[in-house]
Length: 289
Image (cartoon, rainbow, N blue to C red; front, side):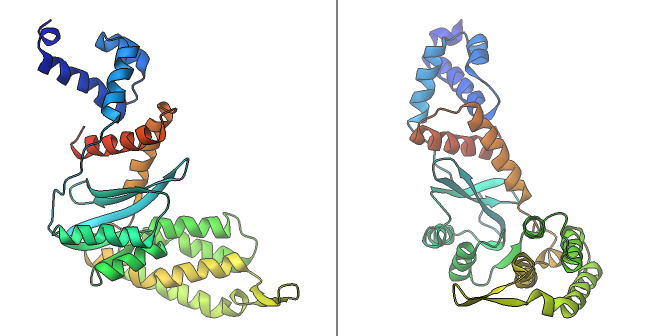
C-alpha cells in the first residue's frame, strides 16, 4: 500500500517491471498479473521509457582486452559492440546499417581519447575493422577469432567435401580451436605447411572463361579457405603468449543470441523503439541486471 501512496517508490517499482520486460522473458500477460497494473498502463509506461535511452559510461581504462563484433537485425540494423572481456562490460557500441571503416575508426578514436588503454582486440577479421584498428591502435595485438576461422572453413568447404585435398584441410581447420600449447600450434603449422606444399598446384588451378575473358579458380572455395587461414596465421596465436587474451568472440555470439531472443518476444516495436530497446538491454547487462 505504501508504494501506491509514495510516488517515488511507485515509480521505482514500475521501473522494475520495465527491467523484467527488457532483460527477462516477460510478456504483458505475466506483468499484468504480477504488477497489478492494466496492460494499457504497462504499455504506456514502457513507451515512455523507450522514448529515451541511457548512456554507456567507460568503466575501465587499464589494459583492456576487447572483443569487437557485430550482429545484424531485420530492416538493416547493425549493432557493433566494443566489449571489455576482463570486466564483462560493453565499453562502447554503435547502431548503424553495416560495418563501416569510417565509423569503426571513429569509435576506436573515441576510446583512445577517453583514455582506454587497449592491450588486445579479438575479432573476426572483417577488413574494415582490421583497417580501423591499424589506423588508430597500430601497436595493439589483434587476435583472430579461432572459432570464426573454423566455422567459415566448414561453410566454404562444407562438412563433407568430396576432394581428398579439401577433406584434409577441413580436418586441419577443425583442430584450430584445440591448440592450447606452443608445441600443438607448431605441429599444426607444420602439418598445414606440408599439406599446402603437396596441394598448392591443385589449389591454384585456373581455367579460362571465354565469355568474360578472365581466368577463375577451378576450386574456388578451397582456394578461398586456404587464403583465409594463411592470412590469419600471424594473428592466430597471441593467446598463447598471454592467457588473458580471449581467442574467440563466442561470448558476444551468445550475448547477441540472447538479445535477439528478447526482441523476438517483443516483435512489433517501431524502429526507434527497437533501437532504444537494444540500448536499455545493454544498460541492464552492464549493470548486472
